[in-house]
Image 1 (tube, helix red, strand yellow):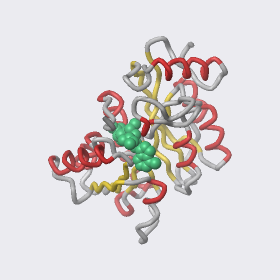
Image 2 (cartoon, protein in one colour):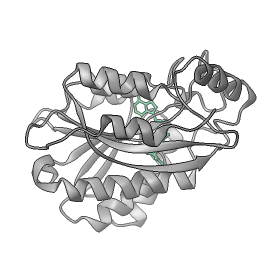
Image 3 (cartoon, protein in one colour):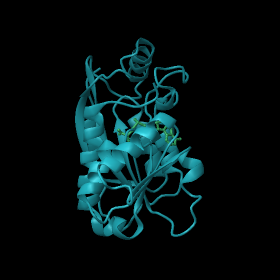
Image 4 (tube, protein in one colour):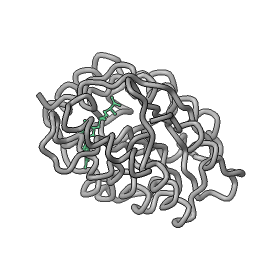
Length: 238
Ligand SMILES: C[S@@+](CC[C@H](N)C(=O)[O-])C[C@H]1O[C@@H](n2cnc3c(N)ncnc32)[C@H](O)[C@@H]1O
């Protein structure tokens, strides 16, 4: 089974993307350029966002064939296939290949499960040893705006430090507590998360963790920096 399924997490991702896109509509210019997405999953969260924002176009990629099949069906069922397209393949190989105008905003609820290796329940969700490999790659990929989910146990401090070094600020974010789901509950993953938190690379409670969907930006027209607030919002006692 290689289809990601976590209703609460996907709903938070979709709601947060919708709110941040609308709040920063003028600066992000998504009505002109559209956005690209790493990791479609079953597409339901963002298909609803696209349905609610008639000027939004999303070009999405997923490496899981079953996700792409489910996503295409869900997108068609919501009547937004003309504005939400899905391609099978690695985002980092596909997103720049289209030619045309460069897109300045990427959205993602990326794979963020930390584990010693990819031998986990759904290998496509492996985020590297610290869980933030994919976010770091997105920050280094040259997008002006990276609107991305940041979990409390996947070295968020390292993510924010790298973002700052690359000239990003946290414009804003929406944070929510989540119960451990089937992917983070795997005993091997739980033990690894505990070890990461013990060495100061994140925070996690006994039963749950925090996720924030944050807008990292290099755009001088978007003022302020909520990086410190983001880290405080993700902080849970171990
Ligand atoms: C946490 S799921 C999120 C799915 C969906 N956006 C949601 O929130 O419901 C991450 C998705 O990223 C996909 N993925 C992992 N690595 C990828 C890559 N390099 N390029 C594109 N998709 C990738 C996985 O197959 C998975 O479907």
